[in-house]
Structures are given as structure tokens and as C-alpha cells.
Image 1 (tube, rainbow, N blue to C red):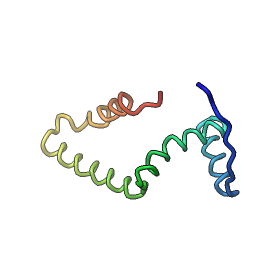
Image 2: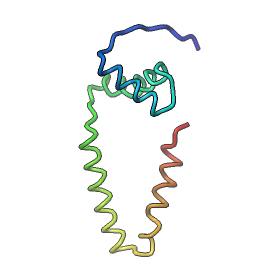
Image 3: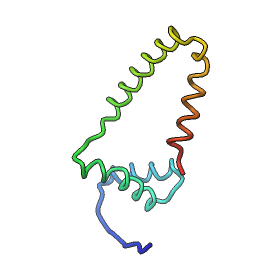
Image 4: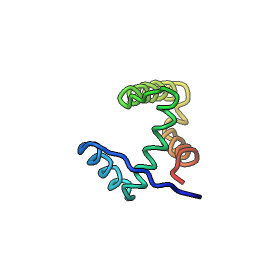
Length: 96
């Protein structure tokens, strides 16, 4: 792969956020920038925004609703739901 060097400016707070992200991920600033770019560009290109608080609220609502349904309708699966969900996360969303 032929990589190109790109230079751009960031505010102090944006740079601190990027460095914090890199530190948490255990990667370089350059790799963190590439990860942010790869995730953010498709959203920006499609004119989408991503409201984390709204997504978390929706996920919690769905989780609570499903918990209620499973507990009422399929109590034999209720204890296994977390394990099943974890298996699905690892199979479909694990970092590679």
C-alpha cells in the first residue's frame, strides 16, 4: 500500500482528545487519526451525525423491553441472554 503524508491543524482540545483516544487504544497518534478518519468519513460523507446519548438511550430501552419480554415469555432463556448476547458481540463486532 502506498501511504501519503498529510498535515493538518487541530485545536489544543482536539489534539488532547486525540492523544487521549490513542492512549486508551494503546496506539500511536497516527493510528488513532486513521481510526477516527475511517469511522467518521463515511458518516460525514452521507451527511449523517451520530448522537451517542440517543443511541445509548435507544439501546437501553430495547434492552429493558427485551428483558421484560424474555422473562415473561421465555423464562428458560432469561438466564442465558447475556451469554448469548456476548457471543454475538464477539462473533459479529470483535476487533480484528
